[in-house]
Length: 51
Ligand SMILES: [Zn+2]
Image 1 (cartoon, rainbow, N blue to C red):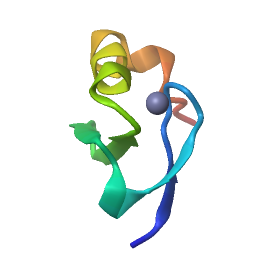
Image 2: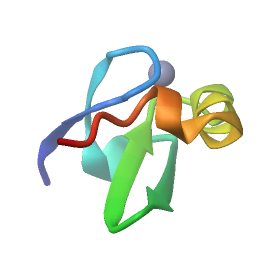
Image 3: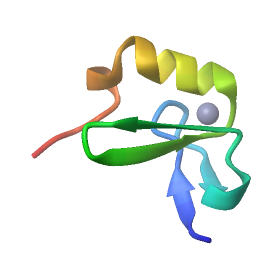
Image 4: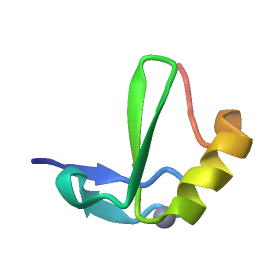
């Protein structure tokens, strides 16, 4: 169990209680809701900062 940040809305949540999750690249991302997951998957580059 760990605190993670929803990359879409910025909410902090417990990874074991996240409503949704997805894997992008080599990373797993957690979301407060299916809505945030859908938004992320439509345009992941917008929410992921690399380097
Ligand atoms: Zn969210």
